[in-house]
Image 1 (tube, rainbow, N blue to C red):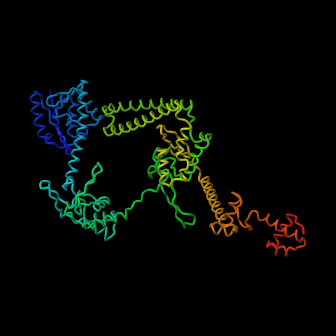
Image 2: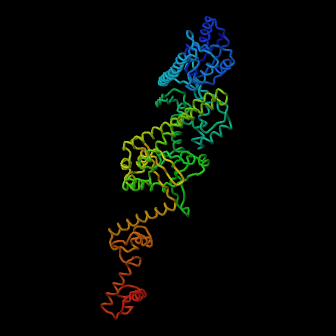
Image 3: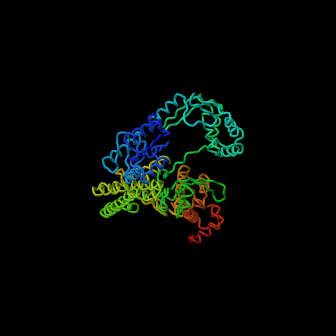
Length: 608
């Protein structure tokens, strides 16, 4: 047979038994013992998880040219530690060209189902073995770090001798650290400005232009004051002092970190009741964020913040046809009202929830299940055809991988939706999902606006509604019930005119309540005195009385709605005592303006 020898080592997973020379000698000896003709020896120094390797590609070219009968490797994991779809592709190329896989002592014919099954098991075990090796290597690296020994690529300001394990200062580059420190602390330059200064006099160690991120990494690196610090994927951070020859003092490092925290201080996002809800734009299917924006009042004398629902970044905002930018004031009141309506008035539930949990809903769910099952079948069919598209040279490996990831994501989402619809259908059939269970679910949020601070509001709404969809004038909150089914709650978004009108009315109601409380504590206040005490105009308080009724305990004055009646009573009393009183005398006795007295007497037909 015509044999191709394939040898591989990985720079990350190097082992003595897998050295290239050792593999070549052993495999050549075995091929000769089998009387196989060695066509060529292909080698790679790369990870077995990659398909696009020079040696492997060159060998597959000969396979497709029909020049190879068997691929000989020391163990199958030298040929492949590939994921499932890449492994299927590699097997397909070998199988179609009737090429076997051989190890010293065994030959696998991929046309034989039993042999192929064994080969698949070996590939899975190779993947697991690789993960075990990585874990062992990381344990070794953590231990080496704890002992104060360095590994991996070192900062350019140092030289590391692997034989003696000695660290020394690289005099050609060590000047960079004090130079950067001086520009940052003494000259007060930022990282971008320092990068510009460095580009005037030198390049990076790789011969490239300096960037602000490279400058920041040097400002933050504890190695330059002697400390070895490594963070690992298991969450552990190991710190060992006095490992590197220091190029800056610990005091300078502390000053730099303090300055960094001042200049790059990022405050956590302010709590907001919708911040934990994943909101998707109904138009473009991109994510919507809660953003704080700032604006000014009419005369530009006061700056204040407001929250809006809009796209996460400018690019997605420009690409969206609707371009939503919605003030949160247009939504919060509606959510509170929806929860209260659902809890207190069952006749209003239909305004918010498109379901009566009846036969009609069961029919809709059955149609959804049928539609989703067809979609699931279509997606799996597309996944099955991916390999054919690649083998027919219609798609590249990169496009194949990208499409496979996308289809896997779609399949996962369809499967979740399908499970949810079936679960919902079963609950309705067993009468375990109805208006009572929905109302019970919302009971926890009945007074969330009154009782909770903004942080707790955010947590509560996020737990009730993990996701939502934002339309033109509708926010659909997807309530996740304890039964693991979703109920959509429709919240109509107010117009800005409605929101302003409601806000004005709410402010008036609060002002009216404050005024009445003040009058209860200070009875007999005039409207002018009351307005000064609570900081409102008399005309505004008069309008509040017209909205909500007269204030109790308010002293009569010209702004009081009952003033005319009181004046009539006073004039009648005085005229009853002495019908001959003149207008001047009545003015003196009652304190009412003479022109007003004549006007009242004429309107009320009072006679002297």
